Image 1 (spheres, rainbow, N blue to C red):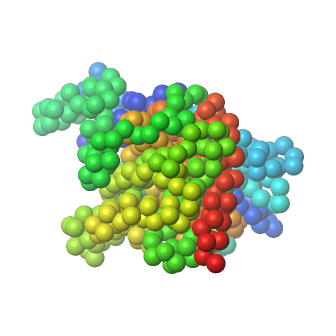
Image 2: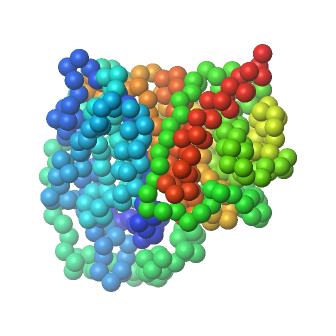
Image 3: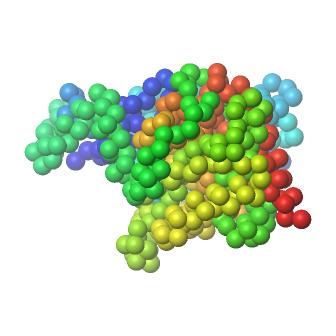
Length: 472
């Protein structure tokens, strides 16, 4: 039987448009070791480890006449050098140049006739650094248990582990007749799926949202908040083909100190920091900000059911969590002048969710099998894609990572910035990842609507300083 895409995975292929490519990305910065990390080293490393992620050598094959959802098949012409590419920055190799390159690369959709991922080695960065950019289509990310290519190349030691997997020989690609035969056989067992697939392929938004809600899981909090239309905002516009990218760097200890002082969660502090930055950004634009002004953020949080908790001792938690991502809508109080009051208002909103006992803590997420932020950020982006721009203004995904150094072919990873895709009608998506004592923000923005995204990124440290200063 063919390895068929799930309904949600297929929907990301059907609904992808030039203005909204459906891939998630990451920018990892490394310190180049003495013996160097060049393109050939990266190719060799991925060739050794790619057997651990077999999906990355498979492509999508559509079924004739849309009788069933597409299937995954081995790519007999798989070319690693097509997927792993090399680039360089002009001197002096500034961070701004890297951000501009990231924006250009992330603006381009992936080729759906090939395996749906790309990786770029970027050389020429100042201060003896190199960067690795990854792009992974959301159709590849079929759950938290999925492994991203960026995860398998990382080690906890400068000495790479001997983990080569099994030799790979591509299976023969099925013929069109075989695909049709399998589709007909499945239609006898589940006739409703044929109708669902044709509707999804035709761009039936209602059908797609229904599938997304089914997979996202518990959405009661979303439904309650969504009864109220999202506030008017310059963040909700028709997006263009091109993007801007900006980053912010902060220290994890600052968030922990604020959390301890106010008896809240680190994620509450993160959202309060984003609120303060959004407030200052709106004021800098001359937007009307009153005491009741808010910006509604869609905040994906990983959750587990009672049965998951009961069965977690029976096997890896990664297997029990699956796709369970609850989309929680938070009204960021940008109209509140006091940073501490903003934090308490956000903590109050989040407490109803966390007190249910269904949230999965940071320690659990980190233990799911290593450092896989692209996978987890993609799950958040999936949730955003299933909801209307009338419901929220922006997406904020927060993925905790390990607090120990990681390495790729002996090169120490210094920072990791997520690139969360834009949903239709959304000019901004914010992703952040904690790693080795730092909290790293990535701002993916529409090029036309967010010409000042660097200014917004620069306001993140200032907003955090407001909360830290209030501790004294």
